[in-house]
Amino acid sequence: MRNRLIILTTIITYFSVNVYAQNSGTISGQDTDRNVIATAVPFLTIAPDPVSGAMGDVGVATTPDINSTFWNPAKLTFINQNSGLGLTFTPWLKKYVDDMSLSYLSGYKKLDDEQAFGAALTYFNLGDIELTNGNGQPIGSFTPREFAISASYSRKLSDNLSIGVTGKYILSNLSGNITTSPVTDPKPGTSIAADIGIYHNQQITVFNKQSLLALGASITNIGSKISYNSADEEDFIPTNLRIGSSLSSFLDPYNKITLALDLNKLMVPTPQADGSHRDKGLLAGMFGSFGDAPGGFKEEIQEIMYSVGAEYEYRETFALRAGYFYEHVNKGNRKYFTAGVGFKLQKLELNFSYLVPQLQEHPLAETLRFGAIFNFTKSEDK
Image 1 (cartoon, rainbow, N blue to C red):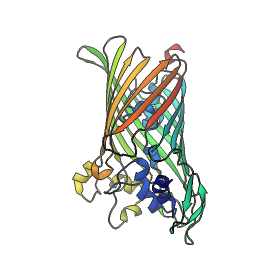
Image 2: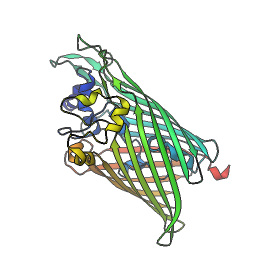
Image 3: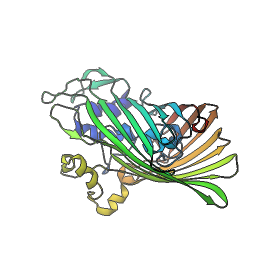
């Protein structure tokens, strides 16, 4: 119970955006003692699926699959099945609380070889908690919940190039309308946001092996700021730029190896000592995020997160995956190894991943992800 209060009650005590932003790093598993970029609804940055979760959180240019709606909607039209449904469940911060979780439901449908639609629901349950006011006195219980519902469209521009867009509605209910301040009334935070993506692949030869080189880029969560109280104090949602590449080599008809690299940067203002970063608008915050760090270019480079991943696949029925995620010590200090496996049984695919932090006693330690995908008729069979 004490751990829950440390993680959650501090987020909700006054239901102000400022307090929420300062503690969003806790939800993401970041070290917030330094100049971390904090946003509202940090659950939107959590890798929802065990495939990417096993490969160091890469995903913008990896093999197109049902989870492309989250990573890069442009990949949807390159999926080699006609349609599918997927469900993933992730117990979150399980070392500290036992009922916090992230659930992800997704689906897609290809209209033809050039167009595809996708949809997804991301649901973040923060668990049942006892609320306290600023004096530590109990004021009731509540189960904070957040969700995002999205719809995507992807279209090929050529045999090797596609673009995609996603629209999403975000709701964050952290207070249950329980009032702790006579000045401001709490309310659920809402936002409308969009994702855009581009994807390109090309057949090449590497060491006399047939290979597929893919490049991808996406900007996700481009949307309005969120307010949690009647004073209309607002904070940014986690707009994120992701670019990456992958290389899949077919060693023989049965064995394939994929290597992938992603670079991520939040397109959100870096915190300033005078708090002026919170007064910026959406576009000013996005484009200004490339040159607003107090530490100059050096600090801007520190804001880039790196993900590397690898996958070995046998007969398209069994996969072994591993990866590594790196975030600078001044920007959250998340460093962890990941691993996982996948099994394909006709139209059913099961995936699992496990996270091992580089640092001891890290809140993300022992993170498990479980996922099931139901794939239907292959496109070429239509």
